[in-house]
Image (tube, rainbow, N blue to C red; front, side, top):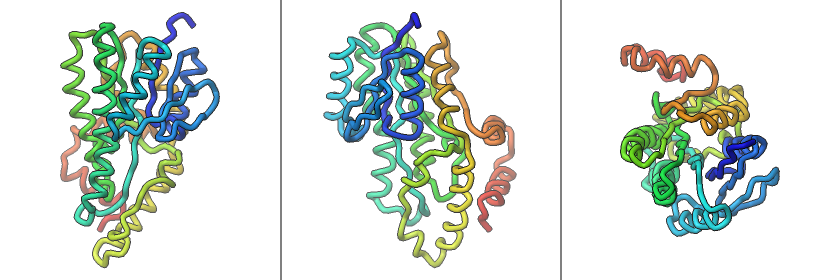
Length: 270
């Protein structure tokens, strides 16, 4: 492969991140992955410890990539977490954990990598959002909020860094079968709530069913490879089950009242 790129993938120890890191290595790229502990996942991925919510940790990992390979051509912000529960009952700790990891984590890593890309006059940043960042999901409200925030941040960032030859992309996955489902935190207060509990359990069962029957992470990994290797990748890419992708593309053409009615029916909300 002639155009070998140095790529940094956050949250690469499992799920989306592991699949895309391994696929990119298989395509001949130099890939650095991160996780909180930097555990080795093999297959040629160079793992580094990074906590995206800790600026010192982020800066140290970015410096290690620059020291090892001299540059970062592509940054893929993939690290993320999820919590299920009613918005009304979310604790400050729950909200801070969700938003700091999913949104501020993206901001922290971009802020550390951008000076190196600006100096070189080139670079590609791919921020992993979600179809839940296009259409909010019930009982996943702060997860959706974190992904909506990534959408707005990425739109503004793409405009600001264009003069420096840096491109920004947003990838919006639908339902995929990964360990994200098993790792999702659940609000005990919502589970025990007389008002929300029954509906929450019913909705979460539907969400988990759709995720377990969703696309394989390799599908997203192949999409990421195509974006990395294109000269002019599109700003926004949706990927996942076809019906979710179509609905997300039509979202702004559907009257909000009709969309809300359809989502309530789908998620079992009376």
